Image 1 (cartoon, chains in turn cyan, purple):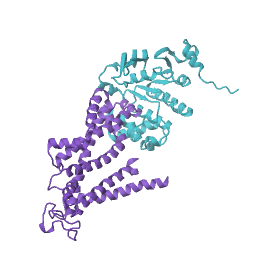
Image 2 (tube, rainbow over the protein chains, first blue to last red):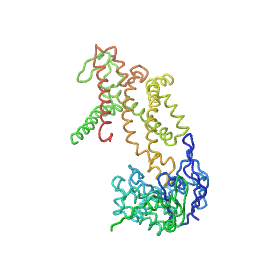
Image 3 (cartoon, rainbow over the protein chains, first blue to last red):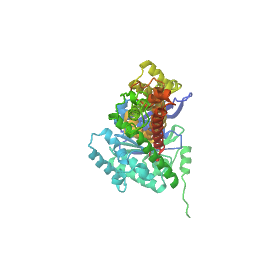
Image 4 (cartoon, one colour):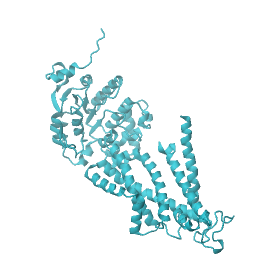
Length: 262
Length: 268
């Protein structure tokens, strides 16, 4: 088993009254599996993902339960070990490609960053690998992209750059936190296709977070539906879509806009 | 639009010219001056300008041009050293407190507030009173007195930056806190920092002149612009040139640097 999350609770203590945002979250992922996480804003899906990525700051969020990634307890291990996993075994891409790249650094430098930190490679070797992943995510003219700044690229290109940067060390788990929400529909479809291909070629497990059920249906084998911090329903995607048990899931599925051209 | 661009370029050109007028002679003054700045000559006491002494001589018969050259280099070095100490220490403290937040941040910032409640000139005065006067002491005193303002500027930038997505991406790539702070965030705030360094430099130059004028900065026979202004007080009516020369030099220096700070290249 690649990832085992059990009874995860996340509480915030930065206000006078502590606030719990995730209750009893369970998740098991095998290698090469694509799992979807759906829910409305504030349902706790991003928080669970950040916790799995080890990104929740340790002093204002209190976490209970366990997150075990390849035998390593992410919640309680020393930071050095966590840092050794981040960018190497676990990667993440974010919703906003506009802000998730550093505006003053060249794209190539940022794509190489995870490799610079984890692998002891010579600069030209790094560059070769960076160009390779940039080509792999279907960026036209990767050499030019390598030498440009983020503001010179479009939103879709930046999201591809983010994916390239996340994939440079071929991680085992890629967390995609609403990676297509800020993009237009045609680009969305391409990104989903790209994620699918990455999953096939490298056997990378993907935790795909979205509120777009039609994307989840295209991409994921299993799906978890979250509401108000609880996982209300989970199971194979087709099963959930064809016979949802929970009232909330039914509403969600009904809310998918249908195009009727007749 | 086009017109605006021209005006901003004007800042850059005028600023560079004015700064160069003072900085080039000051750099030469570091190594060579037309006359020894300490050589006194009774015959030339308060002499007017002549071919040999273009700016005339002071009350001890010392060549004013030579003293301006040496004095402005002293003033520039003290200004430069002050902002370097202030900006370096301020950046490190500001980055740590702003990035980590929490208790350390609270302690440092309350201490900073206390430091801030004194004017930096007064603070420097206290340091000089403790450490004694002289060029090095003045440099340290002003440097320390300038730290709090840089801490505040840098901290605010780090507080803003620490939750941005690109910082999250960097952390997620496995970068250590130090790497995130100084390799990822620092280049993003460098513009703000450069601007405040230029403003701070002007303040430091004026503070040096002020303290030396009060007699607690650079000590005679060393020359600095403030020291020369202080020396000229008694002769203000008899030989106004003694006050005008260092005064104008100081104005050109400060004006040049602040125009540079306003130029398009630096402020945008």
